[in-house]
Image (cartoon, rainbow, N blue to C red; front, side, top):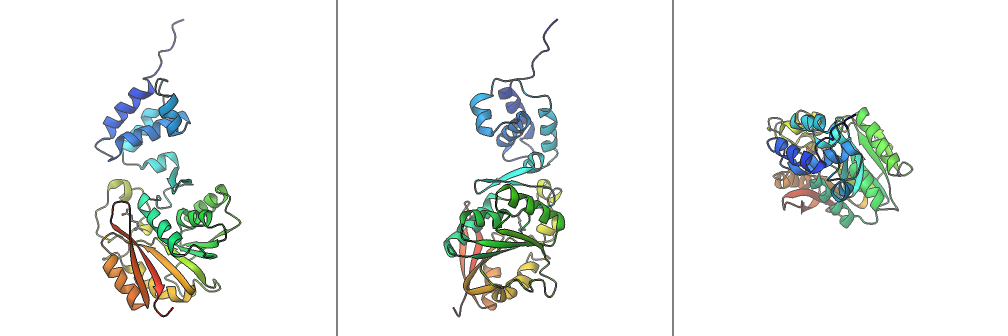
Length: 284
Ligand code: GLN
């Protein structure tokens, strides 16, 4: 009996997929490698070191077509690395972005001794759980208005062995009393929605990520306007808040923070763009 012909070799499958995805993605080759590694059930480094001559698995083509339809790689894989750790993601949470690692860096530099951390709008939990992993003395609370998001955050806390130090709670900072009983924190972090309602986002983001994590009114400032004046009551003496911002918002969010009694420093992301503000109480 003739042997079943083997599929395209992995190397060639990746090349073809990268060409297919060039119109969809700025990172077509990387996307193709990640999808192939996923289809084979191996890490990307094992893929590149050991598997390039193997036959590509039959279901690879279907994954490439999903990506060609603008589904994010993180959704197809169900996971996204952030600050060197894997986080489960679903369409209920914002996919952790490399830009947000700047919030982690700024928080670690500004509050290395923090014992209590509050993450406002925790989503997948990526920011809070990364900080708890990096700060072994700390425990924290993550709040989110979305119950499905909190379930993802809880799953990530458990997977990273941090469930004992991370408490995920439902909470909506537009409602009175949302932080009753929280006490005060040495570090408060937030990556709130900050996109202008009319902004044109890529279909990957617009059609696949939660609008509630992205959009914040006509200027993208609605959540800062509500949150920033509430920070003083949440911070311990000498505590700091670190907020992610849109790269053109440093001045305007800085003014909101100044009006609320904070001194502000700006931190840049890897692309050199303003990405995080560190707020310290002026009186302190
Ligand atoms: N950086 C995200 C984007 O532009 C926005 C994240 C947010 O609103 N917090 O897709």
